[in-house]
Each structure stands twice: as structure tokens, then as C-alpha cells.
Image (cartoon, rainbow, N blue to C red; front, side, top):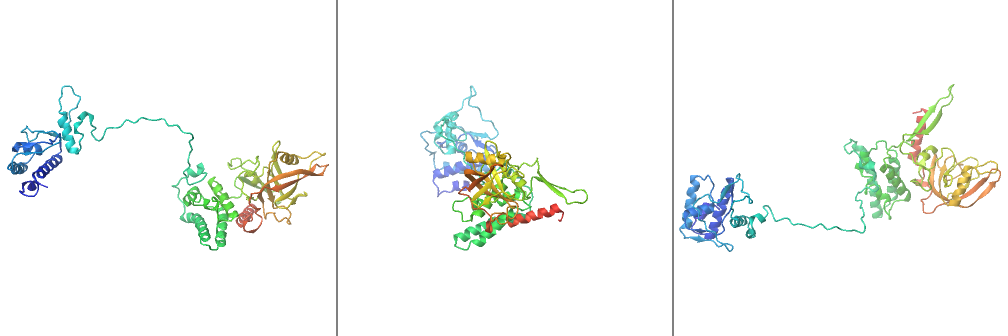
Length: 492
């Protein structure tokens, strides 16, 4: 609305015209960089000077603006004096100065606490309330907040709790420091990432087939094969593992981390073993990682001799001096006994019984050697070590202590068992779970103090992985071992 609306004889009432004039004057003052200090809510108009004081023109008004202002004032003054009622108070304008009540935006406002300086608090409060449109004008200006309501003083109450529990909101279960510190800016091949993500797609296909009542065996076979292949991927690094989200909730845990899992027990076991291996940062697919292989050639061109030793700087060596599973997975496989020593399965490079005096035996290896062992899978008749002068050997003593204490032992089967033994692995050694020593041992030979112990496989474990699709070693493990032998012989 402009001045032409104020000059129109009909239409709006006098009150609306006055309000329009106020808004026009305030808008122009703001565009000129001015700020109204106060604006009366109650005024009596009887002269042109009073109307100009209320409308608050700019400090530097042009002749055209003054002419329009005089015309608007004449139109309003011709209809007689106007009085606008306000909130229980009237403010009469007595100043004839057309610029009264205005202050420059750059001008510093006077401080309220300067001695001897008088400020009309009621007028100032009234003007500020008129601009804001609220009814807080009855409060002194010094008690009002300039930009909002006064800040409330809140008392701090000391709370007491019975217990405090930390909630882990990460999607990755049992995360490791290595996984959290992966450099995600490292470059990688898109094809390698798609190879890893393919495993998640196959897992979801199995779940869909199970939900729709379809044939799940082909899908299970694909997942099983992909898990075995993933153990020997040579392109693995932290970025690929994290971007593929195989260690996240919607990755490998979909297979094993569910009570009503649709997957066969061997797939659950292999997916869990792969998850734990990668989560610990063990991405090297080499079967002999942490083991130094040396090839020595004898004089005269005789066949070479190969020796293997643990690398002292390798940080992945685990102690075998404890009873129980010690972090091993049922069916875990190694090409050599020194590899089982590296992973904490058996603490001896050649001996078949490992333990500590006073704690009993921790693990045994079923192998050849002329012993009268009887292997029936879940039940084993195992001979101790031959002693001398009617004194039992150390291995026999350790087994007798386990019988007395009641601690179980880990059982590994070697490929050097007789071919007639159906539990014999195709190559290397395989971990087949924990067994309890039951009953008193039988003395076979008093001269050598040879004892025969009875072991029963503890219930609740997965079956021995010696046959079928779940058999270990897998085809991929046997292929990797064959490649290793070629390298040692110099054929590749």
C-alpha cells in the first residue's frame, strides 16, 4: 500500500489508513539506514507537523517525498483530529521536529547506567513493544532481554544410578582395532570388490530359496564352494573387506549368527571361521604364513633337504599351553604339524602328546608309528609313550594327570594314519574336536610302562569332517598344497 491509497476518499477506514502510513514511514526509514527509537502508540493529530513526526520520514527526505507527505497529511487533517486508543496510556506528540524519535543505525545508543543521564524508560519500552507486537512494555527496559526472553536459571541435580551399561551400537560384532583403522582412501579394483560381494548375493539367494520352498541344495553348494575359495584370494586388503561389508551384520553373520539358520552346519562353521580370520586381520592366504622354509642341497648333487621354522617376528603365533578348543574350529586343517603349532593346536613339532606338568595333557596327534591305537571316531583307544625301566614317559604322565584332573584334550588326526582308517585326512593334519579321558588307563606293558587310554568325544560338537561335501581338507586346500610342493621342488 502506498501514498495513493491514503489519498483515496473511499475504501479503507481512517484507522487502516493511519496504520498504512506508519508501515510506509517505518519501511522508508529502514531503507535509509535508520532505526526508530520509539514509536508512540497513542497520538492526537491536529497539524501537519504532528503527522510528520509520527510517520518519521528519513533524515534526508527529497522534495518529492515531502510534497507527497504534505498531500497525505492534508487528506487526513481535513477529516478532523484523530485519536488512537492504546493500552491504558496515551502519548501526545508535542515536538514539531519532523525527525523526532529517529536515530542513525551507526549512532551508538546511550548506556543505561551512565550517571546523570535520563532516559524515558516507559517511552522506550512502549516503542519496543509496539515494534515487536507484544505486551511486555510494562517492564523496565533494563530488565528486558534485547533478543529474546530472559535466560532461566536451572539447578543441577546430582543423579544416582544403580547400574551403568555400555551399549555397543556398531554393526560389526567383536570388532578389532585393525578393522577400525583401515585406510578407506586406498585404491582397489572394482572387479575384486564384486568378487567379494558375490558371496553375499549367494547367501541371499539361499535365504530366498528357503523362504519360497525352492530347492536349496544347489544354492548351498555355491556358497560352500565360494567360502572355500575365499580363503585363498590373493587380492585381499582392508579396504576391500570393509567395502564389501562381509564382516557386517548383513554379510557372513547372516549365515552363522542366527539360532534358526537355514544353512548346513559345515557352511555355518566355515563362514564363522572365515569371519574370525579376516576380522583378526589375517588376510594372507599362504598356508605357511609365519613359517620360514629353507632348502639345502647336499654335496655331490644329492637330493635337497627342506627345513621349516617359525619366524620369530611373526605376530600371529598362538600358545598351545591351554586346554579346550583354544580358538580352533572343528575341521581346521594344516599341511604340516609346525602349522598346527603356529595356530595353538598342538605345541610339539614331532611329538604326539603336548601338555605341562601339573596341568595334564592339552592335545594329542593320532598318527602311525606302530602303536596299538584304535580309532572309532567318537571313541579312541590311545597309547601313551613307551618308557624305560618300568617308569612311564613324560607323555604318559601327562595323560594320567588329565585323567585325574578331568581336563579334556584336543585331538588331531594325521594323514599318516593307516589307509584303512576312514577318519584319516587326505593330507596334512585336521583338528577333530575335544575329547575327555574316561576311566583308568590299562597297562599294556609293565617293562615300558605302556598305558592305553580311552577317550570319548565331547557331545555338542559338529560331526567329524572326514566325508561328503563337508570333508576337510577341501579341494582348494589340496590345490594350494600342491602348488606349494611345486615351488619347493622348483617345478614352478
